[in-house]
Length: 102
Length: 470
Image 1 (tube, each protein chain N blue to C red):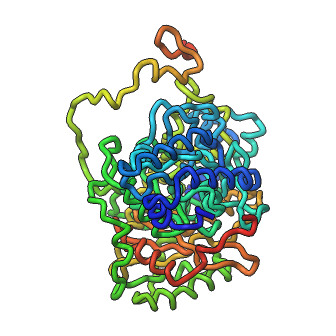
Image 2: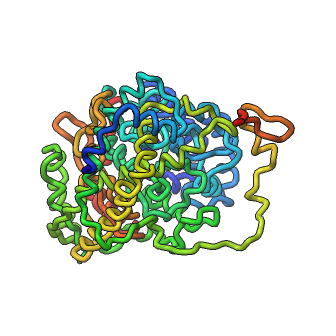
Image 3: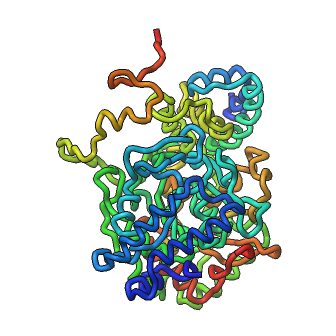
């Protein structure tokens, strides 16, 4: 199946992707997104036209490799526990409170 | 207006005590009071008393502050964290977020004695080219209030056009400094990837994002760049290349340098008045001593696909951290446009599609690098349009996902390759809307771009024009 054909996103796919992305969408939004995402993906699918045989991927353009620093703690860079917690909606004895997953 | 002057002029007056920073900051706040309600450029205005306190400190301790930026009011796009000062990235997710630390660019400007007076409106998370995708109401183009200011650094650009400050720090991932600069008759510089530290910059696409200066002129940008550029141990991707004296190099000789014109970019899809205005500047560049050559860059037409596939994949990953558990509100508060971008990125990275989309785009990125390398064997700098159209009316650009994407066509290829580019004003359309051109350089060629921009601005007056509402 050509990429262009696969690029047509149906509502089932939108529902699956929204789950992967941890987004909450209303049924109306899922309906709206399907054709919109399809339009964009159909356009970017032209990436397939490029001849990339033997072409390596470029992941970053620092044109540097292996940037290291000494394995030493710089306390001026650290947030205190209080600072780290100060923006949380719910904390308990120095912990972030989150919904139970079990 | 005091803020009509260049940073160098203002700095000289301050140093000679013919002007005080207090007067400068006071003028800024007066203009802001009058003008901001009409353009909505600010998300957070720094309390005037705080700014004046800083101004008095600089005035009283002149000797301590040697930087030309000392005592000068500036703005930050609201994508830079500032300790104890609300930072939102224009998203409801961070509506009340008070950061516990500050961005390196902020630290460097504080050290220079510059005075922050505002956190500016933008497209949320950088997602947009019109500052309409914001949870803080759109920013209006000061040249015509029914039209967009551009984006995603629309707030800083509109504010500078109205002389609300002397300079701003924007952020450019796919044109976000250059697009609004061109649509508001101001100057903006997208730097080489890594030239300026991204520490404290709220990430959109981490391998594309750049931190850059926006101001009235290339000369002003040069002064700002000198203060903010340079390696940062807090940003492992920051460049180790030494920082030249950009201001001193503005007057370097341009004789023998060549500007390449990729003719494929000047065909279909580019509005006629914009094309005419830009190509008219060839004579000006020639008079400065530059040679011109025409060339072709056919692979650039895949730039949008490369940019959107990699950019949205990276943003889907970066925005995964906003869970509302440690800070901010939860993911319900993302705008529709942001959710669309996260979804496309997630899809492109998902099992079964990763190779065809994301990996293929990374290979396409290598091909773009080669395309530019090839072009630069014929020239030193490339002359390109910035925007294919004039600033649209509100709602026009975002009505259709494809129109929205295509508007970025000229500014998305530089970021995947890491190249710098300077946008400067070069004319107006028949209905008085600003037009900008961009000069794209090789890695770390900011000094050449700024020199060409500066010398161009010495013999043209587009950049001196101001919107009628002032």
